[in-house]
Image (cartoon, rainbow, N blue to C red; front, side, top):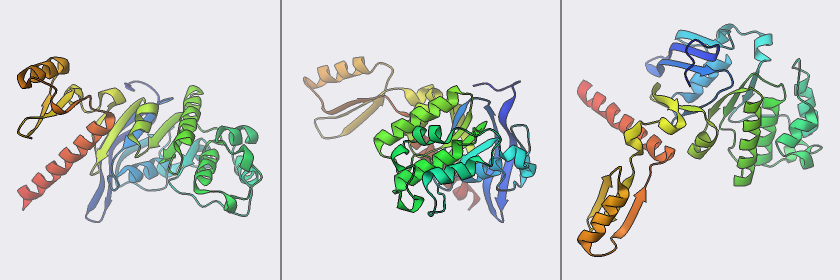
Length: 297
């Protein structure tokens, strides 16, 4: 999604964050359009959380320019914060209140909150509305975290690993909720370790490794066209493993079958998924980092 010339919800230029000798974020440029769902992907320690916390106004940057809903988050006041919804990776709600009491309390902080019962239904907690938070399971508490994040009807919603602890059915229900929020015009920044979640929900995604964005684009284009060329794998009569990338996998399989005079052992035809492409980029980044270290040694 090209945000050039548009009123971007998030605009980042040259973002850096340094802790002593450690550079956690190293020169990131990124725009996120209003109404877009953007998935920020990367392994633990890559810099995702630091970037998100800077955008939320919880952490100061070392250098660079950042605008979130037209405001520098380092100076965002209460009016600006009321336009954000934040679902942290973990939260510590008071266990003495019921689900409904906690949501009603948080709703009073916002100028135009959602209906409490609507929010409870949206996250599937109707049966637990009058249950004390201390009595909820881990997955139910996670649903409450999401409810607290959306009750203020945010313009921009930060979702940090939102479906951790969800069972498969609950994850799909949550995906439906995110799509509903998107249809209402909510801009969403999602961090997740579930690559299928990013593929299902993201308009675009960015992969951050060692503090740098190594690829950004529509989910279906990450890694470039070459990364999506099908892979044919089989084992030869001598047990040797063969792997070939080809745009014509059917022709290659037919050729291999003809050469062997029968079905190859362990035959696979694979079209790389987002997870395959992501893991390949992570491996390549690791190899590049080792090469840099050896060059400096």
